[in-house]
Length: 308
Image 1 (cartoon, helix red, strand yellow):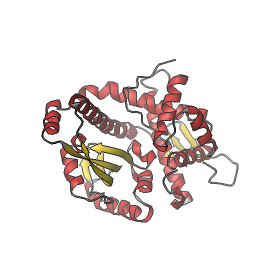
Image 2 (spheres, one colour):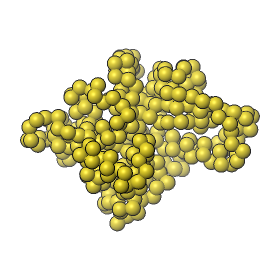
Image 3 (cartoon, rainbow, N blue to C red):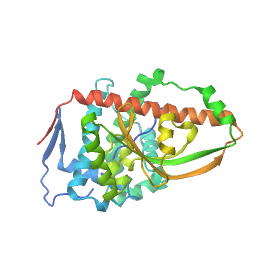
Image 4 (cartoon, helix red, strand yellow):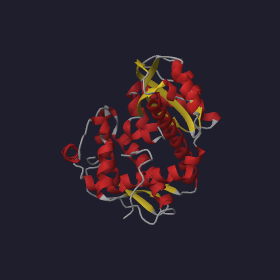
């Protein structure tokens, strides 16, 4: 069984009680020859709810829950189809599986596998049912690292100079929505997302609209130091206040809407080499995520998706 290389970012997708009172299992979507059924959708909604218990998913209509789960599962199937062209199998050993599983729920303060099993039982989720899902994401991340690591460009000297020029820096807690749109449809798509943010909140809108892997966690990126943020994006962030969100920012892979959830001033640590390494790693992960989004879009174009 293959041992996963975990220098990649651990990204996660998303399991729920039935959206139909019928026990009949119907095929809803075909992704090439792979199928998505009503049972798959139910399970995906449960997973979404378990990851987003801090969000008010009760504001979602049943059709919105189904569409969000469908979007997540289609993305998963597209990745799986491509991965089988690269890897002979997508198996995780038990240690890797448990590590990824606990990491997936770290934001809701799950510390170990036993706590996680108790938590998942509240959503009628058997952890073993998540093995394939998390394996697909782990192998996808490994592929991205192998394929694009040499394309990551980071200027350590520039980072060092910025750190030395001030004893304090701003740290932002941010969330994102990444979406695709042609120039002629950008205004309409942005208006649609803005209306959703107004009615359902930013986190829930990320679950509905965002193409980023953070969508499964409501778009939450978390705390990010200003020295870790691309200068173009930092300018946009500095132009809005806490609780506000940006206009669409053109980035590789689409358009990005960022929300400032909170911000604070922090002292720069004395161990400057450790600080530089931390910033470099964040920038590396951010760039790899962009490459991941670009590759996914290319792969998806060659996939036939039929909703039945």
